[in-house]
Length: 172
Image 1 (tube, rainbow, N blue to C red):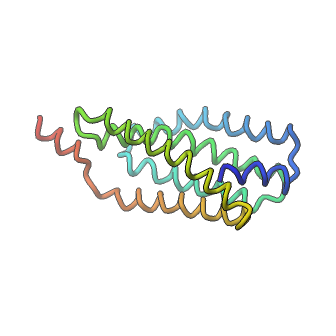
Image 2: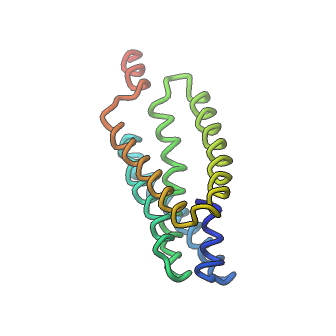
């Protein structure tokens, strides 16, 4: 949804430079606080349980942008985006540490970072190409659907045991 947000803010919501800056500051300030919050959550729960609420909150970001009629309404998306950014940042590491077999953490981190990089290049390019064809509302709706799908997949994975967990039991 990255290419859709500036177009929405400037062309549709007519946000001023101050309002765009305030949105960025809101997102950053929320993320700073959220790191502490998500760290506490992830210390107490398995990775799959801790990441589900992150994705649910993340689903709200494109939905808020979708219904925003003023730049001031977009500030709520800054809050959910900050919460989500910090949660995903903490959550992937929590998941790798929980699910990677002993001695394989470096490989899992490399695979994760490679996939994030590929998605980080392809998704905005694809969104940018589709934006003039389908409009920002469709892009935001698809973004919300993809994030909600992530929450559903994590929810479904909650019953599975990590390979690393079994390996650790054998070594004891």
